[in-house]
Length: 461
Image (cartoon, rainbow, N blue to C red; front, side, top):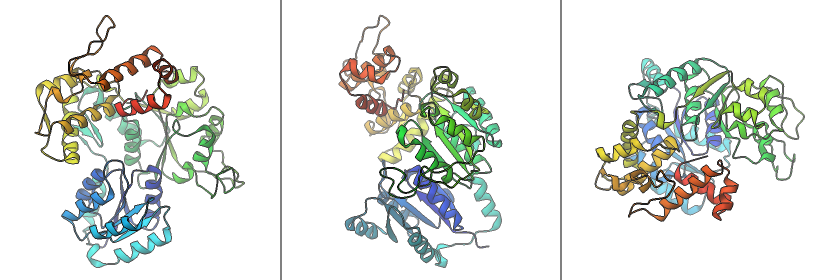
């Protein structure tokens, strides 16, 4: 039995990834998406796509690297590279490595469709698979619950077991969900897992961080705009609600949404039609909305950051992610998994933690949660080239508390200036109630520097 051609899309831009996924599915292709080269290699090994569409410029590993790795196991699998930074030299290099084509963004979808039809009409690229195997492959795509985790989540603690139970229950419903938890606990991963377990999983998942978009652009981001609607609107643009049609829209950091826009969002969630900025055509949508915040949503309501009626509309169901310090017993599992993944990324022998370093990881409170934990493991993997991660490969602030009970700072002999700077920034943030502007003023730094430092630490306050 001949099945629809399987295409793997690899791109770190979630909006582009989702739009391309929707296009390809509309053309009749089976589609899976990956956010990185390492994730793409894993999916390719499990799913065996007929063709790979990959971005060239990605934060961790380039599309050219991915192309070389994919060709090691399946040199006959066609790979088409995409980039917004196209050049003749890059195209030549891509062809030398084995790409069948090289397309630039913004994509001309007519050209893309022609390329796909030309490449995939080859019988060699479309190996038929039995119907029962196709059903098994479709089932395998769903996040699976095991003894050590659930889908992308790793953990077997009581806190995570309760979270997994709630996650499964929430995914069965089509109601709005408020996802809460500290920064770095994995709220977007939870939203994606809900989508992948839901009947909407074959339709787009669109994520938007409302804290990262300037207030004056937020309405356009959500609802789209017409050409000429404002300065810089050179062409018509669909908003997130349109792009997520039939699927799931994830609104991260909902408490940071401009107050003036919250009533319009509430009306749309209640079923009222909306118009693009500068437009006259009214549109409705069929989209499940998930929202997230790293602050207590009821406190956000009390402080006037979030409208109470909008909170109640979004908070039909609540899913709370536990902080890493409350997940006793999960540290060894996380350390083992991340060390294995990051050893592949950075090359060399597979790294393992000795008992003393694991003990230190278990004692640290992890204010940045899993995001900070992964950063620390990556640092250790890079330093431990011989394969064993020892305490000396961990940051000084994990090996030994830098602040004593009397409030004074005590640094070990091998502490770095970076260790001291990190502690000073975090303690000043504590003293100012996480006010980044006041912290920057006290330390003589810019707010941007404070934000960049926190991002580097894997902590987002």
